[in-house]
Structures are given as structure tokens and as C-alpha cells.
Length: 209
Image (cartoon, rainbow, N blue to C red; front, side, top):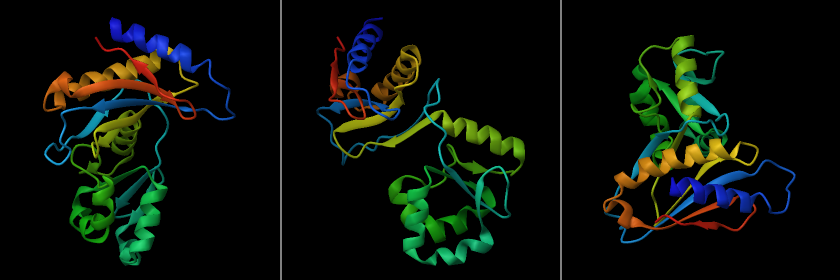
């Protein structure tokens, strides 16, 4: 597969860069063309084969739960302060909720969670029944999911960590690429070019013939 070979070459080049004292994130960049951000609402959840990291998850539940950081309904009223909600949003990568509480979650947290794309959704994040098994299954799915909204003519998203095997990073990239391209209005014609980078490196261009 041509794309696989190109990705392998790019990763080999990136791994020759200066060593850093932390595990760098591997970012995939899809630069777009003939793409109108205002007209095209591309908002995606993509399940990937290999987990990049454990996401920080918080839950809106009726009662406290030991399996996840919980904000109970009784605590909602203290979040009338918008600054506290913003702190909460900055602290966590993902929010889940008990279905019965969703109207209240929307009232207290929607104005901040909505614009950041972190509002619990039926796609991934709302539990009809709160029990240990359901929470564990949902957390596992969230940790293997990349979520993003296209806000500009360039899509940049994490696809792995430097410490991961090349094969795992490549499998994640191909899963994302194969999912994203068909969702674009003009398919492959909307892709200007593809780049790969580590946190502290310059991007390496990938050929997509």
C-alpha cells in the first residue's frame, strides 16, 4: 500500500530528529482546499485501533461513582459561576452523563461545553444505566476514539505517541484518513496535502498519489 510506505518513510525521518525529554505526540495534518468551513459542518468521532493515551473523563451522575470523577446533580448549582465551568472544561478531555440528567447538564454547562465540543452526546457519552460495566465499556471506547470538529481549512489531530510502534501509528493514521476523506464534500479533491509531525519537529510531507 503506497500510503503505508510513505508513512513509514516519514516516521523514519521524524525519529532521526533531536531527542526530547518527553514522549512526543505524533500529529497528522490534513491541509484542505476548495473547502468552505462555514458551509461544511464536519464533526467526527473516529474509533482507532490503538489507544494514544488515557483521556481525563468526568461524569454528570445522580450519585458519586468510584470508577470516574463525578459531578453529582446536587453539585450543579455551584457551577452557576461560568469561570468554574471553564476550569472544569480545561481539566477534562471528555464528559459523560446519565441520560436522565441531560436537560440539567445542558442548562448548567451547555453554554461552555457546547462551543468546546465537549458536551456529552448520544454518539459517545450518554448512559441510560449507570453501572460498573457500562462505565468501563464507555471509558474504553472513549480512550480509543478521536473526536474533532473542522474549524479551519486544516485538520490537525493526534494519531499516536513517539513511544508507540510505527505499525500502530500507521494503522491509526490509515483508520483516520479512510474515515475522514469520504466525509469531505469533494472527497479526495478536498485534500491539498498530508503532513506528519512530532510535537517539536517540523512537518514532513506525505505523498498521496
